[in-house]
Amino acid sequence: MTEIALLGRRAVREVVRMPEATIPTLFIPLFFLAVNIGQVSKTFPSSTPFLHGQGYAAFQIPVSLLFAVSTATSGLALVTEIDNGYFDKLLVAPIRRSSIIWGRLTADLVRGVMLSVLVLIAGLAFGVHVKSGVLGSVVLVLMAALWGVAYAGIGLLVALRTRNVQATNASFLVFFPLLFLTPNFVPFDRLTGLMEALARANPVSYVIEGLRSLVLQGWVLHKLAICMGVIVATGLLLTWLSVRTIERFDR
Amino acid sequence: MPAQSEMAPAAIEARGLERTFKGGVEAVRGIDLSVAAGEVFGFLGPNGAGKTTTVRMLCTLLPPTAGSAHVAGVDVLRDGAEVRRRIGVALQEIGLDPIQTGRELLELQCGLYGISGADARARAEELLELVGIADAADRRTKTYSGGMKRRLDLASALVHSPEVLFLDEPTTGLDPASRLTVWDEVRRINAGGTTIFLTTQYMEEADQLCRRLAIIDNGRIVAGGSPEELKDRMGHDVVSVGLNGADPAATQAAIGELPGLERVMVEQDALALYVEDGPASIAEIVRRLDRTGVSVGSISVARPTLDDVFLQATGRRLEGDEEPAAAA
Ligand SMILES: Nc1ncnc2c1ncn2[C@@H]1O[C@H](COP(=O)(O)OP(=O)(O)OP(=O)(O)O)[C@@H](O)[C@H]1O
Ligand SMILES: [Mg+2]
Image 1 (cartoon, chains in turn orange, purple):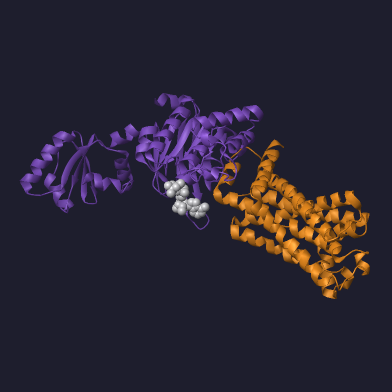
Image 2 (tube, rainbow over the protein chains, first blue to last red):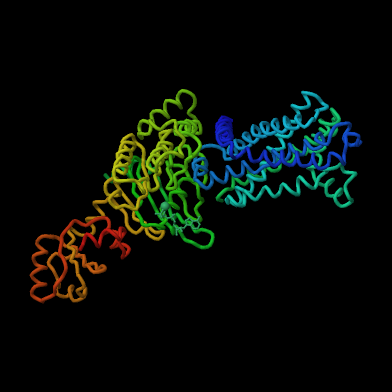
């Protein structure tokens, strides 16, 4: 436990001391948010049924949150460490190897909360009103951050498997199918047949749906439950794989 | 004191240790080692000899493809966790976290070894003083010079006062003054009872620091013993005859059977004659060369060095660039 706390604190310190690793990840979601709102607000005025009386920004904000937190930042930090040799120092210390993973994920949680709060503030500036209230906003931020933690496993896995900075950097590409084959622009029923089938098969769709329900509808418990279920299942799977990989590192 | 090594349990014991990498590189080809508790043991060899690979296997960082090893009495393969608790490691490639300060890095390192709170702070401070980087303690390590990084890395291997300390080329890339500082540190750490396994490419380092050493080349141990034993085995004195273009065979024939000659090694443009009495032999050699009219470049006498041991074992010089210059 203490080793996780120690490695977590160090990883968080890295987030704070290297804002240049975090700030750019904020650019993409904010850019998309502004551009999407500008382009489709006229097409989807607030009278559009699926907007529940709000502007298009409210429909988009959950997607922006996921964009912001779905990064390979931890994977990059890990592969850099493998490269510069500090990783060997950790491996030769009498700690559980899994604590290296948990330490990284701690930083993802902190970074996820920070980024989500910033994106949400930007959303509020675009006139978004979170229907589920202040408590709902907190849940929104936490769920987005937890998704970021779950998603971080992809970067960690690629880092451990390839030990290659470029490959780890490129792992953010996974993000395109995962986050765009979803009801990100319009609801499921507005998608073409093939798109809808793909989106319904994509678990990330249900994360978007859950977060979106907090903003547009209030407390829709079954959507939140499915959303949480997907986050937890994704997190457990990817974390388990990462831990297994680090335990077999060099074997 | 060979008796001591028989009584105390060995700090490091390896049997038939091998490592073949993917792609077929046989980095280590079956080595046996026995390092007594409390000694400074040197592992001397040129680039690519297999030193780092051996250290990584002994430190549980790399599983051997064959063979077995015990460190501090614990099986490296069966109980890696226990081995890790008992050893300190400063690898050849310095591994520091660039965005932490030296102090933070040491305090974290303490924490990983179960030293926390005020104890960790005190230990970090003590080590920063010990390795002489207290002034830079609160700067991020990426601003450190190469020598400072090396010393911080050494300090981080010492937080828990390990039973066995592995140092992989601790002085490579250091200036002569820093090298001497590290030597002093190694001696001081060893005086506190820590067994030290040290790899090096420098024969002088092995000679100065190590009570016993093994010479590794191409994945195999080619010679082992105390520096004195190894050198004595070579002969009493070595007379170097710089050929300056003269034919080695003709020169050797001209010198013929010297009294007390133990062995002759032919090198590039030089002959090394291992003899019982160097000064007396020089006079005789000069007389014989004169008589046969063979002219040579230079003649000098010296004690055999570890480099001569290496030459004898492998047919090559360890420090190729330095030796011919000295002979000329
Ligand atoms: N991961 C690896 N994969 C393949 N070959 C390797 C690997 N690591 C080392 N080798 C090879 O094994 C051999 C021994 O390397 P090693 O690093 O143990 O040598 P060394 O004695 O430490 O050399 P140096 O003095 O240059 O540090 C070399 O031929 C090297 O190329
Ligand atoms: Mg090496």
